[in-house]
Length: 296
Length: 305
Image 1 (cartoon, rainbow over the protein chains, first blue to last red):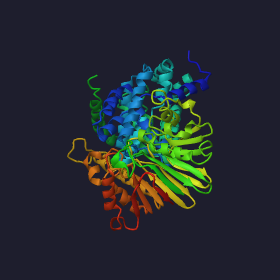
Image 2 (cartoon, rainbow over the protein chains, first blue to last red):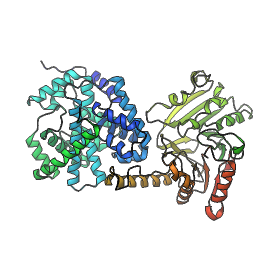
Image 3 (spheres, rainbow over the protein chains, first blue to last red):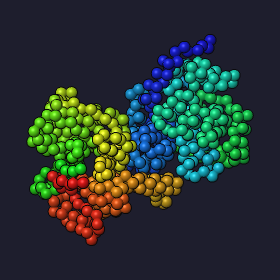
Image 4 (spheres, rainbow over the protein chains, first blue to last red):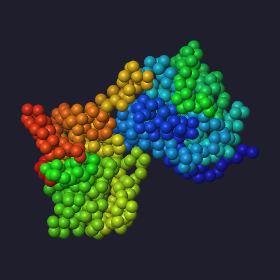
């Protein structure tokens, strides 16, 4: 029988402790270690490997935005962060978090696999970047869309890590289609991944755009006017990734009505989406080859 | 304000007959405010030992020392003198040690205090006589009281490193070491298989922007104390990415930022007195330097600001 957890504060404490020490994903960690331990690894390779890991991307942006708090506008570009922090600092940061995994374990992923979760995050990032490109946004701005897509589901990691059995139930319950994913999380855990994601984004000082993406990517209309287009685009990218079955983060149900509405709000049509499909597949295959997970 | 250079060498203490004139101690600056009397120390390289010893000559000063040390970063040549700074062993001493956080986000106390453990030094941190407060700094503006303001700026070095701009009584002194010009770290060669046009142009833009932020940081400084470990030719021969600046770049940047005086420091440990004299002859003459006073900092040198 479903039950409500009475001790929400206790849950929050466990979630906050996990946020403080979130490890890299096991899907990317081998390549992160290999690249960052290689003194000859180029900045291009470094950027590539980091941009494939949502936790690491968040960590690098966290460092730049907490250290450079006087900048005013938060930095959401990895390119900029690597120029400012330097290749060695970023390599050391990446290594320190990749190694955490070995210390603490990556959490039990029986609600969904790490590889599938990684694929979903990357898929949403790639789709969001393509959508931004199709709307004529500049390459620098497209990167923010990629990062927002890559990070949008980060809130699921602490929940899955701390409450693996409950999270398995969430996925099963949501998979039946009667209970939206967020409702199932709220009912079984007293909190959902959007709120946890926003906690991470605030703690890591990732800026309003990313906080709102984490918080509202299932309800983009709740976002403030300044962030609404970004959040709507990520929401659409999420629906497209679910529809195209690009990995999974536990939420399998594609919502056709929502997809139609978001397509209209973002201003793209289905023909464009078909064109995207090929380039998205190409991008993802490239990433898989880079991480050598094709052979797994 | 008065600045005294207690150490100007980079990387490692370099004593010997070839470094007698400019000195072999690693970086340590004394900034003395006259009214009220206040001592601010920047960096704790090997030069801080003699600074500490000099304080004992003032009657009672050593026993009641109340001062601040600003570390630019935690590379060894900037902190190795701290255990030999005599006042830290005196119970009357009160120290505030400021510095940047590391990328691993370890607190300053454990990074600096780490060298005060038995494996490195016979006195452990908690056995020190002085009362020490560690304060992590980030990029920003700080009010240090008594009309002193501090602006910090991250530099370009293989470790998070802060430049300090200290303003007092309408005068500004600025440190920018260890650092090198920001540059595009991404591949810019279209024939390279890893070339990415967007990344290349974004990298160019970000590096330009950071360099102009840097010049804004030391704009109109009365004294700019800047890293100048290499000549341009040396820098271009495999030293890029090491976190130290070519002298020619520093002179041009100081000119654009209208710094009134420029002290070049963090001399390479291999640089002899004769070589530094020759560099001074080349770069510091009015024909090259113009109206700006440019000099290669010497250990023991004092500059009134």
